[in-house]
Amino acid sequence: MKFTCETVQPLLCSYLDGELSEAQARPTRAHLLDCLACRETVQEGKVIRRWLAGAREDVEVPRGFSARVARRAFAGDPGLLVPASPPIGLRVAGPPSLLPFILKLSALAAAVLFFFSLLIQRTSLPAGDDLQASDRSWMFEPAAVEVPAPALEEDVLGTAEEVPGAEESVEDPESTDR
Amino acid sequence: MQPAVTEDTTLVEETLGGNQLSFQLLVERYQSRVFGLVRHYTRNGVEMEDIVQDTFIKVYRKLDTFQHQSSFSTWLYRIAINTALDFLKRAGRNPVRAVEDPEIVGTPGAGGSARSIAAPDSNLEREEVARITHEVLDEIPEIFRTVLVLREFEEMAYQDMADLLGISIGTVESRLFRARARFKDALVRLHPEYAVGISTR
Image (cartoon, rainbow over all chains, first blue to last red; front, side, top):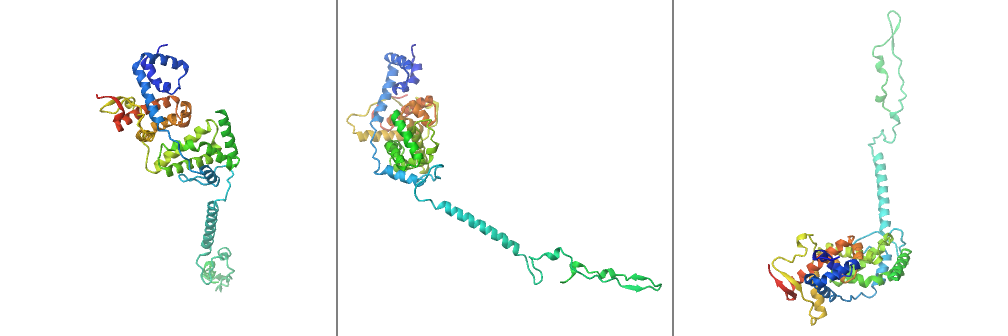
């Protein structure tokens, strides 16, 4: 199978990097033997690789870096850039963080304050000398009131009649002074 | 490679079991490579150390989520690149992002095109070659710079790069092709003395 420039061009990068299968590399090599333009493209790629290869530098790792990082990781250090929670399922060595304890204490204090605020609200109804908010039994138990018997007048005819307005003398529980 | 992979797996399991020394050994195995990778995102030594440290702390925090679908190094590099990019974003130094303009593919900058570029002069000091190369790399969009760095400095295979970046092998090929074109254009723009056969349109 003979490759054309149009076929080979997209493959040249992979050819340069040794990523082509032999089935593709063989016809690519054959094409390069005959095509100056494609050969120049490959050559240019090699020049770029020489520039990049020339920039390879040994990096000096700070002394004690690995021990320092391992210590911080196991201590639950979240890192400088992104705060994070400790990994799930991993035992973390080192002193525990105070933050969870502080958060729990704050939540407990908030709950206690809320409870007390409710309690204060219930007991803060206006209280007079006689009226006490905590005692509301008067709302439910009718006062023991003596209802005077209707006054009777002797009828000229000798029958007893209720005195008009006598009913009005029945005490209204709501108006009774205690 | 198999023994290294087995050793990584053992160290990961021991770390998950709470062994701090095993994690330290894991860091030692990869710290140079991660520093080398992060160096292409910042040249500041303090920033480099912060980013690499945060990378390994993230690795430790997420170790229980590592499912061995890719190699440990691929997973580690992904975290390192994301950490470096996050750092740059927070520092207000957003890396240059490419607009995937098909018209730009294979097309040199307007106003002129160099047929080719010259190799670094053999008389040029190694430090100068490195300085020029990093200067050029800083000019190209981050998605292109990343594939060039992974390929040329970390010598990663296309499949590993695809796994790391979460893209297809075809996209890796395409980005590498464009990355090299961008590198050439930027080198010519910044250092025209290395252009060969400049022609104008």
